[in-house]
Image (cartoon, rainbow, N blue to C red):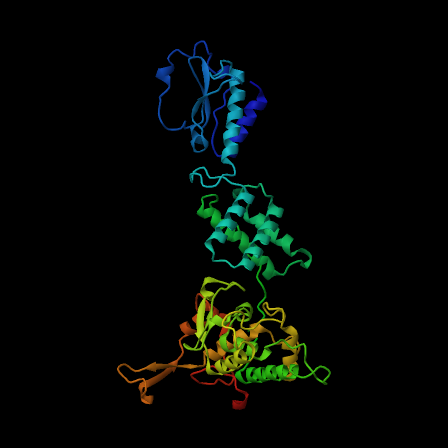
Length: 457
């Protein structure tokens, strides 16, 4: 038997986590005497050989015990020469045939998903493919997030190698990758953390499927994090009222004839009702600009944020209904009467081409200039923070048990619950309200409605 065949058999077996019994040619039974006492020495049990795959002889012919690979078709089988059906009688040939069959079974197992927990082995690229597919099928991740996740995992595959066994990646390898991502200032610490989180999620999937026993990302003692930039920007109620009035003024300028000094023909059409909807619903950019006429319920005083043909929502908890406050109701009724008198469906704020309104930054900068704020300081995300902080200052009417709703004294006013604000913001928990979106107004206004009326400030 060649030393190369023996070495290859041992190496292949070690890589797959089993022990192959490989004996030198001199140690193999002589086919002429193998028949003697064979039945007494060998116990015919249904379990795999405790030593892993091995060669054994029966009636002078070679057989392989591959029951350790029964999940991919292995068993007790003859080792025939090409073109034959009976096992070979030559020990050297038997070893070569045994090694070839062992490699074939290992290749069948390697890269397969869904095997028994004891034998699950996969490559990194196969694990990534399975992870992305299951994330997509779950439907809980937005399209944009899926694209970001796919990109980050593709970068990881480039660094670690697509054919690498996920079990061989250590915490030190993750640290080296993080350093490579941040080298020469290519990515900020917060961005690098997003990449690490993507791989951490991949390993949680691997552990779930028994393709890994630990998560090397979670084993890192120090992980890069973005620097805290302080409290997020929001607007006082009085400042929000001034900005809303600035949006109204810009829209009126846009109605002037071309050539008039100070004309603002580049203002976004419907700027005033768009800004009002941002400030009075706390909706995200895509949520507000993708609103449909069907989403406005004047009968029930509600605005519904739900997926439609124009856009998806960020998360499952983003599907929600928020109050249609009296100020916004007035503004939208006037807007619909002027621009959509004969339509009952379609975009509430269509662009000039009929699609979703695009970039608002020039109009927002023009609004900021009118009220003396810096260019770039007013963005739609700031409106979302403003709504949350203003809503937390409101009170809620509670009808006293057994009282007539038409009786003014039948109502009790209590502070709005944080749970209610969380639901209106589209959050799955109250932590974001506590840590990020909830702000203390310097001049809080107690009211049972959210409104930004410049005449009150």
